Every structure is written in structure tokens, then in C-alpha cells.
Image (cartoon, rainbow, N blue to C red; front, side, top):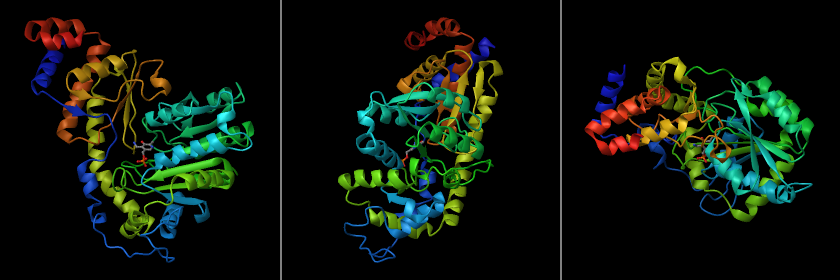
Length: 421
Ligand code: PMP
């Protein structure tokens, strides 16, 4: 066995690998699916006569909002069609509450806190940190948030202002929230306070690549639970058309809608209406968006399956991995506290993985266990090499085989040997 790992390592080292699987980005072949968007011909005005070339329509052109309304299953009056980034809309939501929430802006609270299911999206934690809002982690279960933990945390104080969730193909571990989980979350959160904000980053709303459990449209559950005014849902086409070149949408209502309008009115006169029109002309309706996403699925699925094939070969005692049916990430959870070690070892051999801990607030994973893998933005050959390195080092770290390597490497290559200790 030792000899087998050494041989595997040696052949990987000879390849002089340099592979980056840190971020969930669409690969070139996925981007090519939308090339017709680049020079699509569009009229100069919107369906209701707004000049697309000039200022105006601060909440998006009517046909983009209609598309957003179909996509998020929310009435058009609750839909804003924005620029290319849903993360920006999420940030603006937090900013608007921070400055202007009623009756008390969050900036005037002593210690405002947000509940964040973990593992989660590193940029969400960075955003909350920007505002000095404490991100309080609660665990995820297979069908959404751990409701008992949610309830228990809320019992501990008055300063909780909201929860931030990725309700489908959660980044990074792929959970799909059940309707029941969402309903219960709404019940507990709104009992705590009718100002408690349910903030949903629906980045992977239409990103299935394997059969996926059905979810009721989120806004429908929101309406059934009567929490429209304290809910904000965002999504975008960043992983539908072009990364950072799509359009974004938000669904919200009442006070939350007023707040986002207020903050945006100061900071942006209007979104890029030409890009909105191009997208509407390109897709025309949600059915076409769904067919387009099937083409993405065909390109993405083989990469995930390839990654699963490698992970399956790891001895079970080393840890477990998520097997998402959509989205952009896989998580591997080591059974020993070795995640940082594994990431470092992989880096030394030329495979960059998202830093361990980054899927937790303050970069602190108490078990040093969760590793996020992003298999999309590399070729299958590169991914195979990266997974080979990764699984080799999980075994090396789990079975504490550094000394074997050190001995071997000092005999053959002192420089790399030093990296490994
Ligand atoms: N939210 C989540 C959960 C994401 O994973 C990503 C992209 N990695 C984003 C938002 C970014 O989306 P956008 O480009 O629309 O800002």
C-alpha cells in the first residue's frame, strides 16, 4: 500500500501539475452555449416603449421583469431586474437594512447578528463582516437548516436580524431545502420577530444536472407562510449565460421592496437595459431557459461523475463526500481534523483548492474537516489529475504517512520533501 501511494505520488509529481479548482466557474464550452447573445440584434426600445439606450427603468425593463416573474414565480410588481450580479442585490439588501431598516436601522443595534447555515458561501461571510454583522453558524441537514439549532440560537438574544440561505444545491454541500423545512423556518423566524429577514440566494435555482427532488417555487411557500415583506430572493444568469455578464433578479415585497428601492435610487440610475433586452430576446421564455440549462447539465455532469468516481475509491474511514444533483461544488468532509493539511499538501503539488475553513464564518471550521471542490472550470483530464492528487493526499494525511514521503523524498528530491513536512 505504501509503495502504491509513493508510485502514485511520483507519477503525479513528474507531471508538474498546475490546476486550480478553487472557484465554481462555468467552463469555456458552457460559455459557448450563449455565444449568440454577443451579437444578437435588438430593437432600441422595450415592449412598453422605454428607450433602452438612455437612462430610465430603474427596476429593469418590463420584459426582463416578466421573465424574472416567471422564473421566481412571483408577481411582477414584486420583481426587480438588475445588473449582472445577484450578489450585488444581496449586498444592497443588507446595506439598505443596515442604513434604513424600520423601526431601527441595523447599524444602531448593539450587536446585530445573522444566522448562517454552514458550510456556506465565503462571500456571504465576507459581506456580513463588511458591516460588522456577526455571522452565527447553524448546521445544515439533508433537507435544509437544522430547525432545532435555529430555534435554540434565536432563544439566546434579541439582536438576530436575519438568516442567509442558498435554498437549492446549497453552496458548497448541495442540500436542497424541503418545503416543510422552509415553512417551519418561516414560522420560527417570524414568531421571533416580524422584522426578521429571510434572505435567499437562489444562485442555483435551475442548475440541476442529475434528477433532483422537487421543490415548490420558493415564493409560493413565502406567500403561504405570509412572510413576503420579510423575505428577499435573489438569482442571476451568471451560470446560465456568462459569468458576471448575465442579468440578476430579486423578488421581495412591502418594506423590504421599499428599502431596496431607496438604497438603489441613490447608487445607480438604472441597470444596463440593452443587456436585459438581449437576454430576453435570446431566451424569450422560461421553457427555453430550462432547455438551455439541460445543455449545461450535459457538460457539467460528466465532471461531477468523474470526481465522484475518485472520491468513491477513498477508504470510508477517511471521510465522506456530498453528491449534489446540481450546482457547482462538492464537499469532502474528512473524519480527522486534517482539511488544512490536505489543502496545503495539494497546493505543494500544484493543485489549488479553496482554503480550508473558508466555508465557515471567520474562516473557522471547528472540526478542520470541510473541503470544497469545484470541478467545472477545468478539462476532464485536469480534473482527473487534480482528483488523483486530492485523494492521494487525503489518504496520506489520514493515515499520517508524511514520514514515508519525507524519507522517500529526501532520497530523491529534497526541495519537495521540505514542502511535505
Ligand atoms: N451566490 C452564490 C451562492 C454563488 O455561488 C455565486 C457564484 N459563485 C454567486 C452568488 C454569484 O452570483 P452573481 O454572479 O450573480 O453575483
